[in-house]
Length: 281
Ligand code: SF4
Image (tube, rainbow, N blue to C red; front, side, top):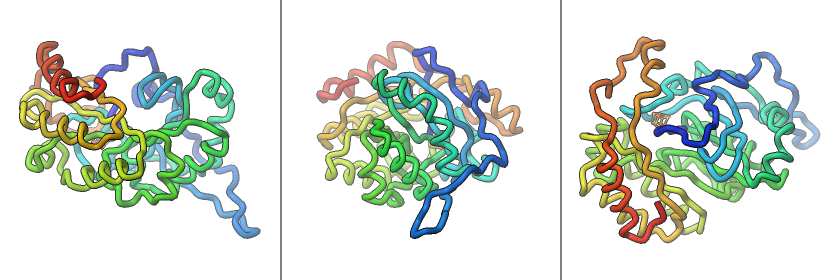
């Protein structure tokens, strides 16, 4: 999603989209998973992976950024993850081998393992396999998703997820469509399903002046989040333009080049709209 990694990281963590750190290594598919006596590697397409702190879930985390996303958010800071064909094919086993050196440190530090994107549920088998393996290690797991493809998340996959970082990008269907190019209903359905399962959720809301900031649009998201009963916190992520250069590199026009970042007063108003409904912001 997203990662959505919208909003400046205040933690000092290094994001792979800006550093190119720890890029997957082509041609290093190292193995597979024995299934009924056969080796059947489960592979997926990823952009990169990296360690991040307090961005994609609690603590220091090993974060896998999958490639491919069905949405086209106007404010997306990671357009290089949009197309699956631009990623690199790796096996789940290879990803876990990359995470292994950090395993003990992450667990001692109270962190975990996050699958982000792009959209991880575009590759539900691969994403599910990563979570299955991370849970085998006893790690805290987080799924960072728009929820747009929530129908693709099996109960089995969700059973291996401790926390869902759910982007609720707007309340009104027309606003959601203008901002993302998709429909809001699947995300709301997924949120209700997570509530029925009692799954912990952090809602994320990207605040874009002139696009998502209307008081009734925010109120809709806030009322909905407060009604679910499983939302542990809400992150209001102020729109920023740190990813603008990526659009130039890709030869794509950045749609929000002329859009201002939110003022502190606007951010405070929106945070208060969530807080006044009893949500932790
Ligand atoms: S287009 Fe939207 S959902 Fe997709 S990666 Fe970008 S911000 Fe996330």
